[in-house]
Length: 87
Image (cartoon, rainbow, N blue to C red):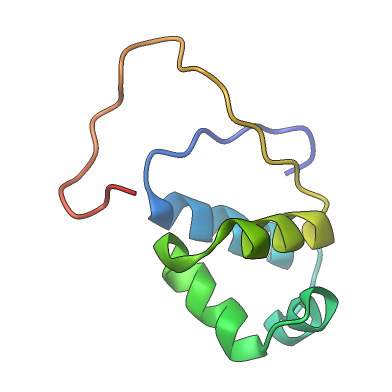
């Protein structure tokens, strides 16, 4: 995932990106949890239910995984979202 950018349209994508980054570094959920001061069960939950993550948790996880969180303006109009998947 080095050097790649992933626009987020819904929370499920965030969970997938975090899980993929963790696995790419060959980290278990328990190892990541230890790095960020959370339980393994919380990491598992957040990977599956990323809409529940708070900014502090997201920043700690991103830091531990060497990810950068960037917010920018869309170049095109708003992307369609699936009902129930909005933030």
